[in-house]
Amino acid sequence: MKRKEKRLLQAVALGLTALVFLPNVGLWALYRERQLEGGPEGAEAAAAARAGVAQGQQRRPRKDIYFGDGQRRKDWHDKEAIRKDAERVGNGEQGKPFPLTDAERVDQAYRENGFNIFVSDKIALNRSLPDIRHPNCNSKLYLEKLPNTSIIIPFHNEGWSSLLRTVHSVLSRSPPELVAEIVLVDDFSDREHLKKRLEDYMAQFPSVRILRTKKREGLIRTRMLGASVAIGDVITFLDSHCEANVNWLPPLLDRIASNRKTIVCPMIDVIDNDHFGYKTQAGDAMRGAFDWEMYYKRIPIPPELQKPDPSDPFESPVMAGGLFAVDRKWFWELGGYDPGLEIWGGEQYEISFKVWMCGGRMEDIPCSRVGHIYRKYIPYKIPTGVSLARIRNVGTQLCIGTKHGAPGSPLRLEGCVKGRAEAAWSNVQVFTFSWREDIRPGDPQHTKKFCFDTISHSSPVTLYDCHGMKGNQLWKYGNDKTLYHPVSGSCMDCTESDHRVFMNTCSPSSPTQQWIFQYTNSTVLEKFNRNSDL
Ligand code: UD2
Ligand code: MN
Image (spheres, protein in one colour):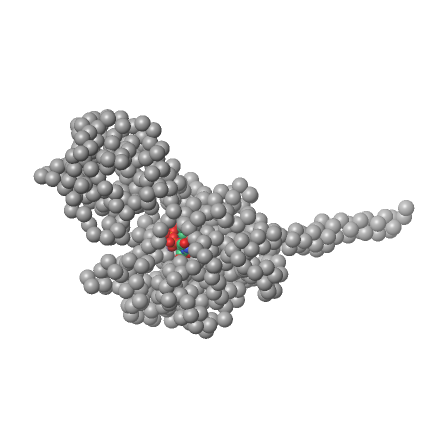
């Protein structure tokens, strides 16, 4: 073969190889595109069907693939909006606390939402917030071409101003080209303002859609309904009482653009449930975790894992739950949420575990901040395996209270506080009967992890760290209304004169040994008693 022909052949072979293997050209790129396009539409459609969305619903066209590295970056800050926000003055502006009068602190203000709706109503729907990001965030650049997102906001009987402020904050602090739509998903609310009034109000925003479930589904299936109709490349979930802070969206979308299997969470700031002041959570940047009771916890980032630049994204084992962004197709590849999850809770573990097990990652993004109103108490019922109760003594008509209860301190009788809500959130006279069959002060979300404990047939009843091992912390509620302690074989008794609660030889006819559980879920309570093996 002549040398020239050999060169020519070599060049042709090289060309062919390139056609097959080089990324972004040729057959490989075609293959990859197929893989991505042919995503898990099945799971998505199933979720839509389950949630009662009509099949074959018209979908708006979706964007091209946005992946790829080495693209240009830009500063996404909306300087003009930032300048205007800085000039605002008035109630709650700059995230300042609203000065509360006692009249505004009345129980009624909290009852429906678990936060002070009177105060919320007095603050502008598009109020300004303080920029409390790390200063390095000001100079961060993100991809010029970012995926767009559907923002999904489930709500159940949300307050008017808190819901609207969520929507306004998103509209005014997100680049419009990145927001494919805002989907408000009503989980069968019955408050009037969430019906026609909401539809009329939202009609002024073409990007806002309202969907409604056909029955109460709980927040997990409600989110799924929103996700099943979403048209954006990315799905971003928010709670219905949030405020998005400056430049919150680009840092989230940027991480997904560079790795579609990354689920990203903004830093969740605290909007005070009394005065609506805006501040970071205690300790600010922490990792998500959970304890043996499956309660969500935030724990400090160990020094060896801290980033040299604290404004850089960091990994978190589990997310808080409510606020995150995920590539839409990846969400469905993960199977979405388990649709069997009821009303509230646990879904953050399910999705977090799936992400890590399926080769994804989860990150918290310090340059993206969103405020959230942490409620004083949850205003709706949650079907957990626990029951709430107030424990009233028949003989004295007093209630067991733990207002000043530290571990080791004896239980005491107190005058019964009025109303379930008030007692629940002040954690004074409400007790949880946990699945570990012990009795703890507080409602299920705020138990103190102290349990009713006693060491002998005549000792006082004290609060002691819960050990979950039954023994001295196992109680049984009898048909005769006694609180029986199987280990000591004695019953809980009390005296009116000095308000002591102590153990005594059982004498079921004595009124001071009879206790009435108020506000209980009888099914759970029955189970609690049935399971208590004597
Ligand atoms: C946290 C999460 C929340 C969710 C929850 C359960 C944050 C800031 N919040 O509790 O997003 O993950 O833990 O694990 O991470 N809703 C319904 N239907 C219902 C009940 C609630 O649509 O039956 C809505 C509600 O309006 C809100 C969202 O679901 O938009 C979350 O409920 P929440 O605000 O009561 O939960 P939260 O913040 O205490
Ligand atoms: Mn919430």
